[in-house]
Image 1: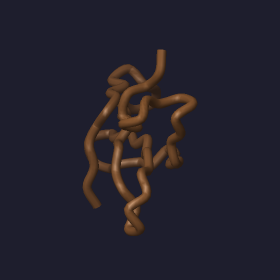
Image 2 (image 1 turned 90 degrees about the vertical axis):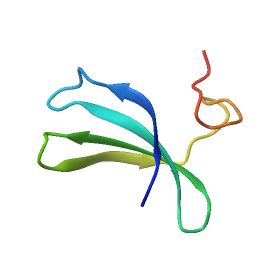
Image 3 (image 1 turned 90 degrees about the horizontal axis):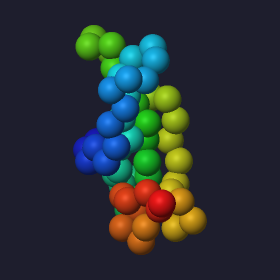
Length: 63
């Protein structure tokens, strides 16, 4: 699996986390929020983004 970090949350508790943009095996865009304690990566949530909250590139959050 590969992706692109599109938002960084270094002050999240209990571990820093980030929002990752990627594609499913069926080429559908997916967002994954993951955190890390330096040893493990924790998947917090995953969802299919929409244009209500994100621009058409699905990477830029609407203001």
